[in-house]
Length: 259
Image (cartoon, rainbow, N blue to C red):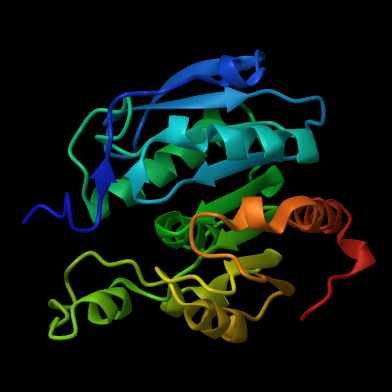
């Protein structure tokens, strides 16, 4: 059964490009998912090559809807950012599915390592909402620079039970998002970001993930923020938290703080 319209809300029309946000030094990238599906993304260049941000977006829209956020992050971090669309989103081909998103995520990671020549240990993984499950999946198996999980959820089953109280989890063979079972396998530093009043994914889910994680970790709760306005409500502090986390990842000997 298709999950389009239930879990996934893709839009094909790109409303803007990085140039519209004065990000002129970027590349239009077409690359294969792990299963060969042709995907599209933008690689936005930057002066500092010590790290590269790989962005896994949420379940609605496409990469053009993240450009305002991307511009602000790019200005704050001054590192390259690679953002891409899952299959059926934007200019990416194929039909969306959970299994497909895992294949897409690994295709994006392999593109950075194999085609762009980035060392895996220089890749900073950023997952937002649905994308947090993909970032966790890769970080649980690869030694990356660090992981930012914004508006993270525990698992598909728990989200479904939240919205559909009579939901019965499918057989164990079904493809699921299950960050709760993988979070303690991550060795890279972790930064959790969550809106205090997130009505879509309760902050308690991120807290449970934070508690189970064994690596260096931080939790940034944004007062008064909901699900989609974290960077807007957080303002200067939001980007300062990002900057501090990146600095710690690049200089691990400085240590890391926990909330």
